[in-house]
Structure formats: structure tokens, C-alpha cells
Image 1: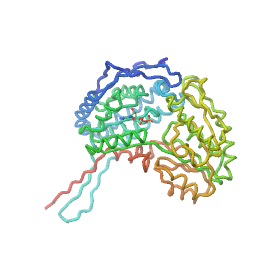
Image 2: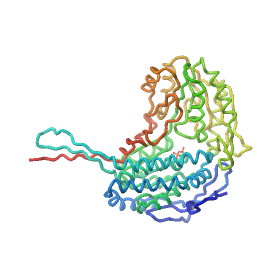
Image 3: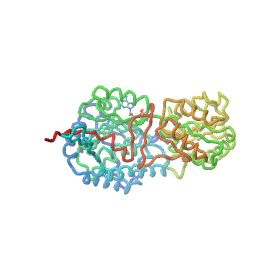
Image 4: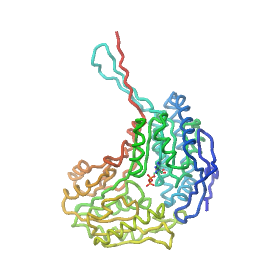
Length: 484
Ligand code: ADP
């Protein structure tokens, strides 16, 4: 039931607080979404333990921020190397608790390491500036300083990468971090903490507090010693936590839900668009915030694109991520399956035609839903208005570029958008007109540690990855110096 690891000590059933492993009287069971079998337990900790982690972080801050950027970077680079070295074990742990196919889990491990590596190097590039003064006897010097203790709450869909893209920049600039991982995927986070300690990260700089979301979240969003709060997860919870942060005016970064349009124009390379659609829509069983959520397809190519996409989707192999090569694993829980089923039923009731899949797959387990393509979905369908977060591609027809842009922007979300077109002028018009933080042109994959990831509108605040990903963890300080 539990994966066989080359390094069995990467599997920890204890939280990591201030450099110590802590067990709890009460525990939370964690299961494998492919089978429903319990794979282990983690401590069910609460506010007092979170407070201790914050205190340890606060105490460790003074020493860490005074280290040279090179020293901090070296720890991150050592940590990245260990993550890569143990990629097979980390992938097994991730697939066991999260469900994604093993090859995808391995891909995420390397993606997670890439943030540690990137920010290990970026540590050396925190720059200030000197501004031409407003008076001859003044000097204006701008420096950038670490904000202080960071509180982080992370989701289950990317159990490692959503942590390293926060912990990487925080630690690089000198900030300690206290993480509450999703209760559904704590083992990946705990294995990461084992490797952080092994890489030489001093005690207190990184804590992983497992347990109850609400009381731990309350500490991370209200304790005055926490200077910055960063969250990846649902829009509803993000809004709630941002409001909690208002009382102590914390810096806040949010990476929330999307409703990504994937627009296919009449001049698109349809084979390339199908490849992009498969990568964007069905990766992680459709459970990423940048997954294409609705396909807007020009009427001239709607049927051809639908046929090609359906043929590929019908051939996808579905099964438990740990058992042999599969293209799609289970969803995270039964509620997620029910949401996909509801969006399918709604689209069909409104006249949509199922071309591939279309139903749950209870013969495999209670959390499997077949990858599905539905053509001729009207724009008032649920799948156009809400994030499905599952393996459902619904195709909506449009006839003009203006109509496509209007449909694409008709949402409060603004994370990722995709468009396929051969027209260079249109490519530029779209990148400017689409109200999204990220636009993929002729590609369905936009995530990399070297580029800024984040949304506009209700999809979030701040950017992760790239040199810009450092900004969220730095305060600007002005020194105005009178010279006589
Ligand atoms: P999803 O499960 O769709 O990723 P959630 O927003 O529910 O989105 O979960 C993301 C993270 O937020 C998880 O770590 C979860 O435990 C945490 N979380 C959920 N509700 C709260 C809450 N009320 N307070 C603090 N954290 C929460």
C-alpha cells in the first residue's frame, strides 16, 4: 500500500517544526486516490503548533538574512540537487498520495527542483538603485530587504512545485517560511523538508505544519510576526484568507482559480492545436489552475478540430498512476468526479454532443472519470462559466475574432489563456486584448521557472517564478540622506 522507497526515511509521519520532527496525539489519514486505501497518517496539529513554528521562524530570521546571498543560494542549490537525486522516491510518494501518473509526478519533481535551482542563482541578483535627488544636498538610495517570516498554504494538485516556488524565493532573499501543505498531500512536503535539512538549511527557516486548515491558517494570516502570506488554492478560500490578512496588513500573494479559454482560429494548425489541447487540458487529470477550461473554436474548423481531438482522447489510457504507463489517473476525490459529471450533464442537456468519454469509470474506482470531449456546447453552459478542474473538454463555436475575445474575457478569472492562429497580427492583438496574466500563443504549455506565473482579476496577486518572483518577498526601503 505504501510505496517502496530507496530511501525509506523520506516517508515521515511527523510534522517538521523549528528543525524537529513532531508527532501528534491525533492524526489525519491520507489515502491513495486511485484505490481509496489509507497510505499513512500525519499529526493533526493546530494553532499552538503553528505558533511555535512562527516563533522558530522569527528567531531564525536575524541570522539567515545576514548571511551572504552566495551562502543562502548554496543551500538552495544543494537542496535542488538532493531533490533531483531522489526524484524516483519523491515521484512514488507523490503518485501514492495525489494520483497523477508516475511519469507526470517525476516531471513535477524536476519542475519543483528547477525553482530551488533558479532562486538559488537569483539570490545573488537582489539589486537596489540610487535616484537623482530632488535637492542638491540630499542622496536617495533605494535598497530591498527581506519582508520577514512568510506563511504559506499550498494545494494538493502540485504537492512539491507549489511549495518550492514559494520557499525558493523566500529563502533566497532571507525570509523563513512556515508551510501548511494540503491535508490530502502532506507526505511530499515532509519529504521535501527531510531534504532541506540534509542540504544544510538551519533550523526554523522551514517548517511544515500538518493538520487543521482553519486554526493553522488563522495563525499564518493573523500573527503579527508573520510579515507575508502566500497562498495557492481555490478563489473562495483565497478571498477569505486575504481578508484575514487585512487586520495586520500583511503582504499577500494569491494564486487562485482560472477559467482558461483555449481559442482555435480558422487559420490554426489543427494538429498542433490538438497537441496543445491535450497537454493543456488533460495534464494532471485536468486539475491545474492553468488547464484549458473551455474551447472556443471557429465555426469553420469546429467539426474538424472536434473529430481530431476526440480521436486522441478516446485513445488515452486511464488507470492507477503507480501501475504501468497511463495517460490519466484518478481525480483527487469523489466531489471532483461529481463536478465533472455535473458539467457533462449540463452540457448535454443544453445540446452538446459527446464525442469521447462522457461518464465516470466506477470499474476502475470511485474517483475515475473518463477523459471527455463534448462538441457544440452553447456559451451559457456551466463549463464555460465555472472551472471544471477535471478531464472535460467542451467546444463552443464562434464566428469572429471580436466574439472570441468577448467570450474569453467574460469571466472574473484571469489566469491563463491560449490561442492558436497563424496570423502574426492576430497573435499580437490577442496577447493585448485577452485579460489574463499569461497568454499562450500556439502552445498549451506556458509554465517554466524562468517566466512569471500569475493572474489578474480574481485569479490572484503577485507573480511566482522568474526574476520577478523575488519581488513578492522583498520590501523596498528608501534612505534619504542629507549631506552637508
Ligand atoms: P483546492 O482543494 O481546490 O486546491 P482549497 O482552497 O480548498 O482548494 O485548498 C487549498 C489549501 O487551502 C489547502 O492546503 C487547504 O487545506 C487550505 N484551506 C482550505 N480551507 C481553508 C481555511 N478555511 N483556512 C485555511 N486554509 C484553508
